[in-house]
Image (cartoon, rainbow, N blue to C red; front, side, top):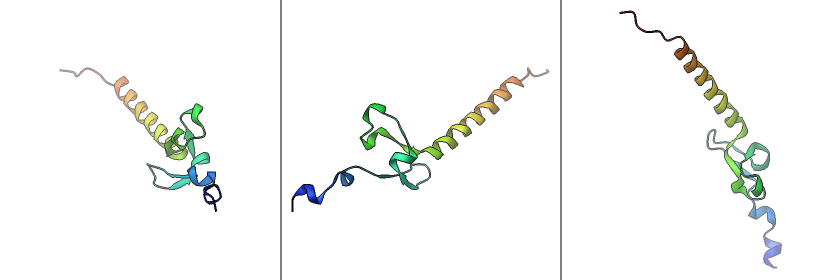
Length: 80
């Protein structure tokens, strides 16, 4: 039996990755964003945060930014 018969390409490529935010193991190709478009065949070209966690993080950050902007707009000089 040769090495080619023992190990296939699917053993060398990672099919699943654990999300760093939620800790759930998900499919690499379907559930993670591709960050380096010119290296689509490598697993290092995909992010370590799943798509759902990325969307949650970005929407929360935008909401916080809007709240800070409202506080700045409503600020007045103190009346001494």
